[in-house]
Length: 130
Image 1 (cartoon, rainbow, N blue to C red):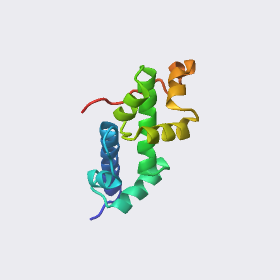
Image 2 (cartoon, one colour):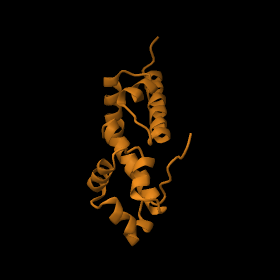
Image 3 (tube, rainbow, N blue to C red):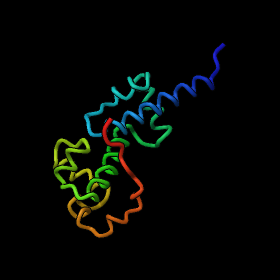
Image 4 (cartoon, one colour):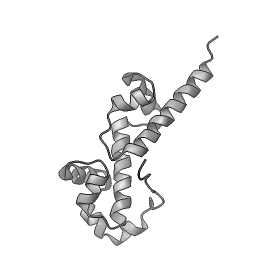
């Protein structure tokens, strides 16, 4: 007999695996198709469950995670170019544009800002390596 709560549990475990995948591979090219495959779901089911759980699309989440990660590395003193490469932005101008859109300032200004060392997301520490 089909148990809906078992199905929900399986979906949430698969969803958690896909988030873990993002956190492990944020510095690589990630497609929603890859994430859906990781969660053993169809593309449309995965997108729907993602939006329902996190109120954003998978690509918005990846971008936001990458920006949080880039802020961490900028605070550690890495250059803007290094941080762009380290966080999965293979085009520096795209990194600068995305960072500015998320934070309201450029990565260079963020790096120079004395408040960047005391950011409220300073507890954030990316998973580095595999």
